[in-house]
Length: 37
Image 1 (cartoon, rainbow, N blue to C red):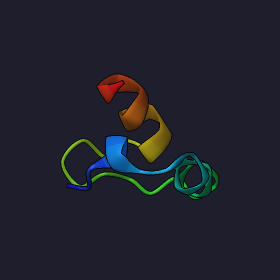
Image 2: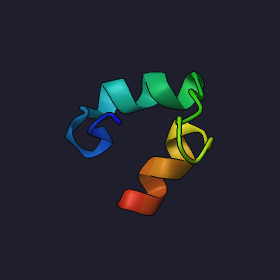
Image 3: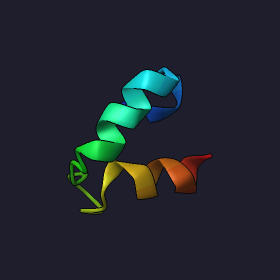
Image 4: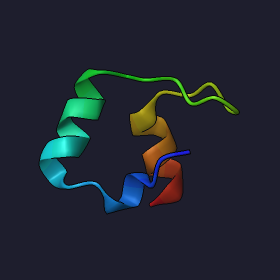
């Protein structure tokens, strides 16, 4: 699992445009990072 909170704002935007599903929860990165934040 990637450390999403350590990503830069620009990297987060790239992930937001590319919703990569997480392995265990199967949620897009933006939703998962919102849960972590």
